[in-house]
Amino acid sequence: MAEDLKLTKGISREEIYKEILPQIEALLESETDMIANMANVAAVFKEALEFFWIGFYLVKGDELVLGPFQGPVACTRIQKGKGVCGACWQTGEIIIVPDVDQFPGHIACSSLSKSEIVLPIRRGQEVIAILDIDSDQLEDFSDLDSNYLSEAIKMLEKSME
Image (cartoon, rainbow, N blue to C red; front, side, top):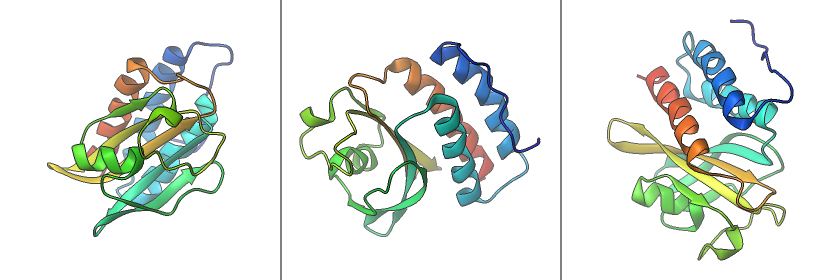
């Protein structure tokens, strides 16, 4: 696949996901490098859905370390169980936060971030990374995002096998 996105203007978020998931799959199918694939996935979601911030945190020892991302500068290290990303790493569960100011222990990398969705990335049963997406709008994420982003995560995990 050529490294350009084909995006239709003026369609719903669900239609955007349906349009870009096959393009993500094509980007990932011939590349096995995790960092390269994470960089492209972040770029696709940033361009297609215009999220405020999207990026990956990689498990390195006893902390999460900032990986490929799109958006303003970010926190570089997060402890297990701390903030939304650390909680996702600890539980291995997807977390949707409608209002980050209401999440106990939220780590505010940017005061412009208002809502967040975080998904674990696994190799086997082990969480090896976190996909973190921030919005500058309250209540911007739902099960729709969780479902489609989970599909992208499955593609990413498969590319690392």
